[in-house]
Length: 258
Image 1: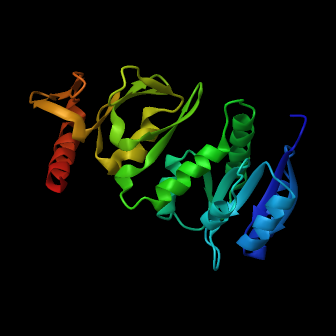
Image 2 (image 1 turned 180 degrees about the horizontal axis):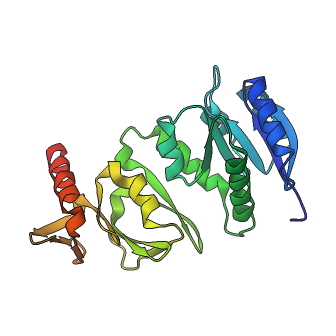
Image 3 (image 1 turned 180 degrees about the vertical axis):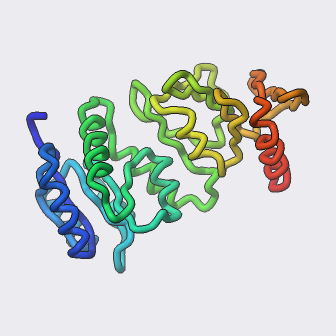
């Protein structure tokens, strides 16, 4: 790329900042334009020297990385979060399709995250502001069922409440989302496995290698060797024999909490 990715590091520990700086010197597509040890300094720096990317520590004294984002009305930069913990916030970050890295930062993982950022920024429909807005809204939500999921489509990102997802269907290396009150499905450029891992704690169950369903929208369960579920949209989804026990347990657990 002709222009390098302009990067700011926000990290309260000097050792962490130095480690990141050392890693960035090995990545020829980046240019470090500043660093800050806390949120207040970072806000001033970002306003004075707008970056393309902020490597942002989540846990900092007094104010955290999310506070920084909330204090900036204009967020045209991308974010890669860094954290020492697989914290509660990681799920919200994943829902918004924002990158994060666990400390100690691995050079290959940082390289891949930088490459993904560059690839995203080359697309005309890329809007980091919307992703960050979605993240902050998800973090404010008391009920995690109200989380919105960022779906990267060919036209740009869509932000869909998980309550509206009836089922997800594998389509090679893509996933097709079928939504409540929507006749047309949405094709997303991620695999079903990724959404299985993301949605398993939200009332979804992988009943077949090609299907992930929202248990809330089962209309009928027909028992059999594996079985069959009829969804509210009229779709019949086969339950594989291998997944039958998992499905039964998920259904029992779901029924006990509604």
